[in-house]
Image (cartoon, rainbow, N blue to C red; front, side, top):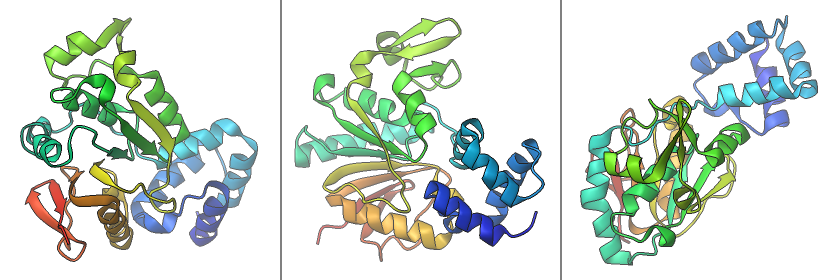
Length: 259
């Protein structure tokens, strides 16, 4: 395939996704496999297909926005959130916390957050804003139907209380679903939330360039209240966290320094 620069411009115009922010080798390999699958001879031909074929377009968006997700992924980190950081935030800011699950994928993470918070706050008083770039995964998240593997990490008490088995899948209860508001959001382009007490964004920025990561982490810092917490993924670290206004509390938790 040739003319990747033109493809990037075409994709930006068509989808508002800026491929310059993603690691080229990785992203190009993913796109090339899709182009081959659709039997297109060039990037131009593939762009024409995306404009005329909704299935191909939806497949492209879904493929670009990497959706590997499960409930309570890295349980030891969730344990830290539950035992240390949530009580701290509640003590400082009360129970009406503003929580943002960014790049939330199929909803496993925001729903995990509702269940975690329910240890300290009545479920009906919990409000999570969950955002993702991909319409398809947001639709999946709103449906709230998950495989057995997806919910393996959910504590047994929550499995019994909040999930119903339907065939081979598990449906999360409306009681949990009601507390999450899903919205489309592009981390590289759209306006960020403000006044957040907790932001969770895990295992997404590994696909971004260093410049794009820096920009996103800076915007997250700006979005947090003083002493607010950013919870990142097990494959990530913020190298220049001090310059971005954070202090490192533990491997995957960063706290915004009070000014």
